[in-house]
Length: 269
Image (cartoon, rainbow, N blue to C red):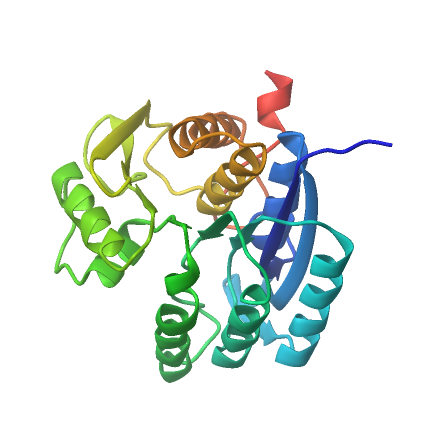
């Protein structure tokens, strides 16, 4: 009998293994955490149409059933929320989360699905703001998401990113981890943490200047895993950044026009 730390994820599937639910479970496993998951939608790429997204939502009732099963089976206190996909799923997830107390709710705010029409994407964004963000204890937006959630016109430097994190935190989120990635000029990839009182910068040398698929999912999942183990937010972010940096260095190449993070890199160095 073993009693590993447990982390739960509610997110969409991405069938090539480079993002979404697949990345979350792999990251949990690499960090020694038992992963449990609920699927909210299926997103896959169309190799015959420029690798564009194909989006398939899962019925909200089935999402609620999955959550009921997972939460009844395991004593869970830490969850990552990834792509939810539709307002109906968002409302179902919110209602299910409210059925118990959570120590950590990590929200990776996926604001846009390229497989949705603009109107549907806007409805989904609004539902996410209304039903999910108020429940979050940690939010991990990228530069675009930070700009949208903060209401800022532009984010072009680390000071802008820090200001965005503060504004997002004003909505009641305990911790905002705003990701600079390759979007902020300079030799370092800079993320900032807003803890309600101060900004903490965390830096790593950039590994090239191209986006690598799965980096954001991996970071949020690694933060979730470390929080599930009882670590504090700053050490969780530092570990997560190590996982992502090493995963980018040893990224996986496929037929897609982008490479993907390899979560196993941290164990193979």
